[in-house]
Image (cartoon, one colour):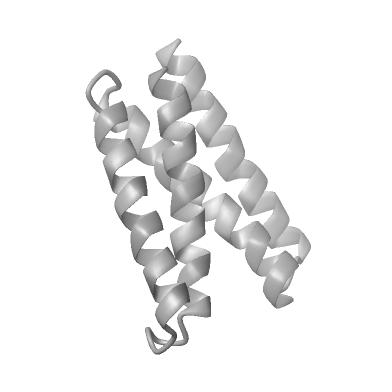
Length: 105
């Protein structure tokens, strides 16, 4: 169950990171509210996952999910570059996430 909680925490990290773009420097109320709620929920779930998972495994996986998800949504939503080096780098982060998960199995 901790792995599912960690995965949802990572998705919520993507939500607040992308949400920051929509807050327009915290000048738009509802995007700001959604971003803060997503941030709080992400940290709460990460904390719950850390009750049973080692921090050296869970935290990098949480960050990796957030980094990859945010980069992909940046490409899809905001037209950010999707050059080969960026895609290979994101694939390497995914490989690192998988490796950490397998190392904990």
